[in-house]
Image 1 (cartoon, rainbow, N blue to C red):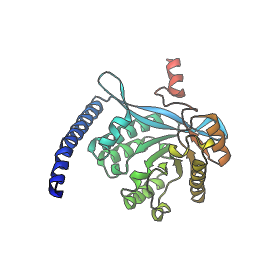
Image 2 (image 1 turned 90 degrees about the vertical axis):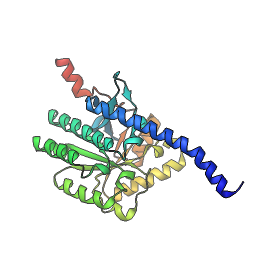
Image 3 (image 1 turned 45 degrees about the vertical axis):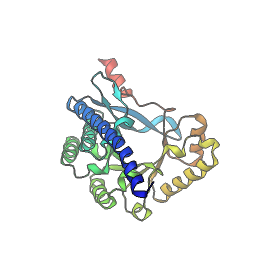
Image 4 (image 1 turned 180 degrees about the horizontal axis):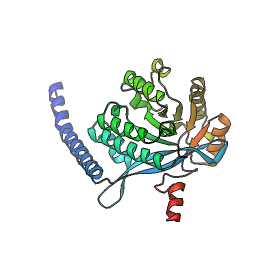
Length: 275
């Protein structure tokens, strides 16, 4: 078979697959958009605890949850990849930020992190939500943490650094999420305004018995210390992992062993009891 014939054959096989993937993504985006229009979106809160005091949260992370028509939570893994570069992704960031700012306004003692994509920088609605939320209470900015994934930050590093500099002056804190999973160019790293470094869970799982993960995690913690960042280990699931991470010098930890994401965190549970 000639090279040209082989290429044509490959295209014939690829086209149906590409069409199926495109159709699937359009269905996902449509479902998420309709859920946002119905306001079927909420935050699930997961504690980030101090390594030296597991019963004391340093802050909570607000994880966005999208509901379908039946009230079932649509797993983030089903839609995040499809919406990241789409406008719906920006609308999810807007909804998450609005819910987070509302929670901060209602709970003066709460410190909360909210995820965002670097692609939402400059999105007019996201900026409007942020400005309106920060204007409600002068303490909200200093209690808000914006989490940006490593891969997202590196899409447009120069824009991210300017954006972070402006909000840092207003008191907002920044966390670099999933550190180690992406491809950070270290020539940019020193220019970012990240205060918190969250080590990706792939380096944490089974770390107490995995010499390779031990070396890698310790190297990432060393980077965080050098740049004077608070270091957090993600996806901690066992006491053995937690003990090793504390001994290694991680400032904080996050994972199911300390609490699963829940729509009814302690302060909401107290409110429900009073009602």
